[in-house]
Image (cartoon, rainbow over all chains, first blue to last red):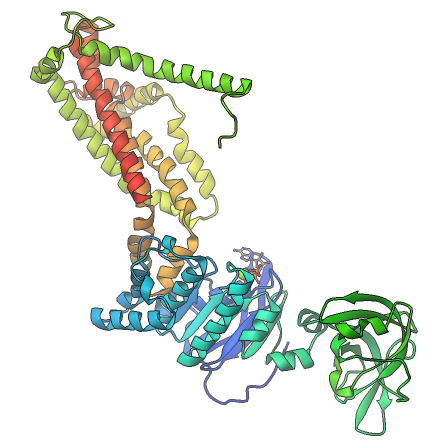
Length: 365
Length: 264
Ligand SMILES: Nc1ncnc2c1ncn2[C@@H]1O[C@H](COP(=O)(O)OP(=O)(O)OP(=O)(O)O)[C@@H](O)[C@H]1O
Ligand SMILES: [Mg+2]
């Protein structure tokens, strides 16, 4: 488990400390520790069945962890029932109360908290305006479009001003276009109100686009938590490298230093020699992103980070094209070039591929 | 578009069967209602002339009126108790869900499979050994045995259709489990309760086997009154009583449908 040290010393808004959830011999969540700072949006990302929903539901109090502690605002809430926790949840199915109007749905939580009628209605109107729901307050949920229902679900959870907003794949029932605009909108409101949020998704581009930090989960474990940029540039495990974007993973062994620049050399199969920033393991896989590869007709003359290859196949994608490059030692690497350059590198062409040391990272096998 | 056009040979055969079955079910009812409005002094079908004399006679007959009121009292009590017991049970069995819930449902529904005559005999023996209660209260208990399963059968699917996240949303917004049940779960499924209540009422009101064995002879329910009368002489008052019963059930069913349609 690799986590980056928190740069802030402030008390996290919500933190999971070594959370475990066992289902009769099956470990759905395995020693997960995550701390979310006030105003931060953290995405829980991972493939289906990796334990994202289970983790989120433990925060809301619907599932009791087998081991570990959950703190909200410095208070241990691990054994508190859902209605005594200060969380607002947006369900995948929205779970709007079908017998109440939009206004009634949004008032529900405020009434349970004993907020005075006038004050409650003012807050609902205010938030409804922000979510562009003000003209829909008297409608029943079934009289709304999917996108409107989604906004009501967010509004209902936000109006109680929860310590943490919890969202379980809130966009999965929207079509692709609406999903993108809703995502931007949610991010805007979250930042405007300074809401702390935990967001579950299995869509890596969604996670990268919306989150301050992304927690990648793999089979119940936290694989890595970091900013989207660092996650992409410095994946900690093979799984993360593959799950976030496209990656070429080339097995390599450390082979001393370059002598210059303080770079470490790692030898791959055949003639592949990588020079990359230090702190690399003795043995691992070098992560080389397809778009980091440059293609030339001539050798670059450099000793490292370049090699000769044969174009095995070309797939044209419009703005970009993917070349499958075969290197000596039976290694195939995918490179991404501009679509307009695809014609210059037909199948069978001999080319030289090269990349920058800074574009490389290395994961342990 | 229906799946099978009635103009095709298969569709025509289907329609024919449907019409025959409906005629078979409705036929006897038409005979009873028809003969109850006859002008003759005896039971006849098709009716000779038209008169409501048997209905006016029915109202003036205290035995029928008492029977009706007794049945009404029993059926109302049974309906209320079945709903009070059946709805929370259905909620626990279907919405909450726990291991063995489906087995329990099968056990709870099994009285519906039993011929009520068997239940009647068994209960008669039971009450002679353990006289828990007296009079028509025994009949109320007996009817509960079949009416609670009936309520379960109607409300369990209603609870099953309910999104489990609804109650969780209520809890998340700060409602206690009781508040969540009362403010969200109950209002959302309640349209199913009208149907369940009507069914329990009808089941109790026109139940005969157990009523014959267990009811208080001094306060006979309507079905037993009708039976006793029919054994003496089959006069048109009987047809009028039966027709009234049919009409009542019909009105009840239509009301339930209207309630359902209004709820959408
Ligand atoms: N009540 C339960 N009993 C047994 N196993 C469960 C239960 N709930 C979840 N699991 C298992 O725990 C694992 C994690 O489930 P979870 O719902 O958290 O996955 P997820 O990451 O949200 O996946 P998805 O993206 O498909 O929603 C799964 O393998 C699932 O089968
Ligand atoms: Mg999930």
